[in-house]
Image 1: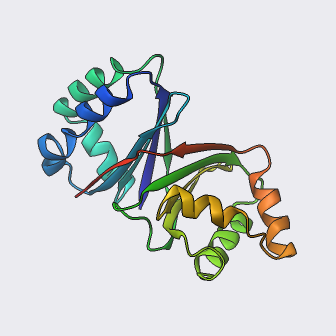
Image 2 (image 1 turned 90 degrees about the vertical axis):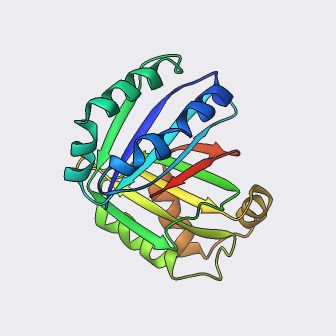
Length: 196
């Protein structure tokens, strides 16, 4: 799997959502290898888009389509500033890999000096369903420089907040502290999803 993360400031969340919903029906059928997308705008106006493709080649082929270029230009008009794009070839799914029925999504962006250690932490978490039953699943995308984007899909925000109150075992807590040191958290309270 390949993930592209799109991020920008946006004060027109409702208009962006309406515009963005058209992509799946208008351009999605021609996007070979597109698997799905998760989008949302935080309360303070930060847009995040997590777009999943079967491979980098599929994503690049989609980007090269003239109709995709025209769509991207129009997308930019809904943003308050420049759009950043981050590509990740190293992707790990955990639990069910997310869900279009998720009521709350949290995107965590940070950087680590040991990608293998972070992958192991996520793998261990993915098999420990009893630790956080509110987590449906998610993806971990890591760049060659250690920059990562973790997207976590929850049943709903209330369950997620309740789950945060349960302190994990000390060894897990220490690993989480290492991984999340300096990371930024983006809460998508009203996410929207598209799937192939």
